[in-house]
Amino acid sequence: LRARVVTPVPVELAQHLLVYKFAIDELMTKLRILSEEFDFVHQHDPIEHITNRVKRPEAIVEKLARKGLPPEPSLIAEHLHDVAGVRVVCPFVSDVYRVEAMLRRQHDVEILRSKDYIARPKPNGYRSLHLIVRIPVFLSDRVEHVKVEVQVRTIAMDFWATLEHKLFYKFDDQAPSDFLDELTSTALIAAQLDDRMESLHQRVHKEG
Ligand code: 0O2
View 1: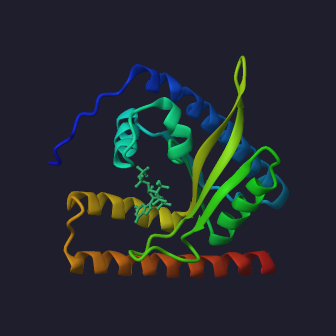
View 2: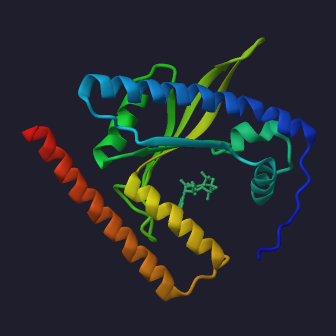
């Protein structure tokens, strides 16, 4: 078992995190509307499912410490991009870019950063589209512009990333190289599966 380092969390930090939950709520509503409306118009839902999480306060304090920063709530907005996280799982690769395009068209969603690990997978084979977006959250006395990390990926990418995370974690970052090679080769299989499913999807659209 991994030894857990217990990190003290200031009370103000927990309170500060509420606005990240609201940002997730806003974005979830936007994504649900896009999913339902696109399905209604095109008889195809580009979103299979969506999950979300607010980073645990302990993990925030640890990440700030890794960057050499104290656990000050005022430092979070500038230095951490993934306090609020939304993961959108799509049936096909074309849907990943469709979801991105639909988000880009929303005037109140600013896309601050985009990393395309599908076009350029990580060396271990990890694929996903990562967006850092900023959306307004209307509070009782002010508007806050809050960052959310959005990971958009296919079912196959999600399957691989979820299992890779589980398997890698067991080795405490010290996995043997043949194990890592095998994991990377399974990522290629997932990518081939996505390509073949995409071809079938295109065929259904042409012939259907
Ligand atoms: P968790 O628990 O998912 O939050 P930054 O966060 O911006 O400082 P970086 O390196 O720019 O760091 O982030 P990156 O690589 O764009 O995205 C980090 C997140 O992507 C990770 O969050 C994972 O969710 C996911 N991810 C990136 N690489 C891999 C990978 O090789 N395997 C798996 N399974 N997931 C990956 P966290 O913070 O690690 O964890």
